[in-house]
Image (tube, rainbow, N blue to C red):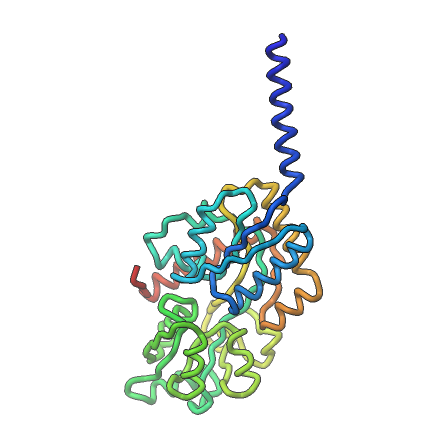
Length: 322
């Protein structure tokens, strides 16, 4: 009887100890791995969320930029981190794209990454150089057909969502166009603005200043509804391409296997942060829409986006070098 009594006391002590640790979280700095370099949209949003988490939980949140390989370097580090809540990460659209493009990933996106909260989303937008003289998708198609070699389009890199979007468009409307890949939106936009490139898809925040200044023409927004920032620009669906959706998104994730209590705590706190007026204003100033999904909803969102891009990769036969 005494033996069982001692065993019971030990078990009770272990439970109480675990409960105390959970209550004490966080008690040390949190590492926040970000998938793109300092200064980009991922970095800006991650630092905004990280600062608010630090203020709320009274511990440092240290941003750790791990750019490269279309986010794979960062996502691998997140997937292999201890699932104790002290390492989280910032992920974006490539997390859903990479499984279809890279067959040698060393982690399973669904099992090894824990979605916590969607921070923001924004559509890709089809833009053209004004010197091309087009005002609509119909005009773009006519311009391409009028040239023996068609048009040249830029992308921010092979296998990126803007690249796949353009290939999807080529297939949908038999558009004659040649791909010219760039290393990021900056150099691609430079050549588009100069007239060396005819058109491209790009994330709305990158294009918005140039659209507003009249330096590029917006032909279509790749979402199922018009953007409040471009109310006069039709969706690609309205422009005549059924079911054409290409959305960029940004969110907070953790390593797979995180305790559900920590998942719920992160999800609730980040969604509280996203409702703060200064945070919403910052996200909207970037041309994005604040997220409003809990962890479970965000997981479903990523699954659907992964399936959407898997179909796009199959249909367009886009491949990348591993």
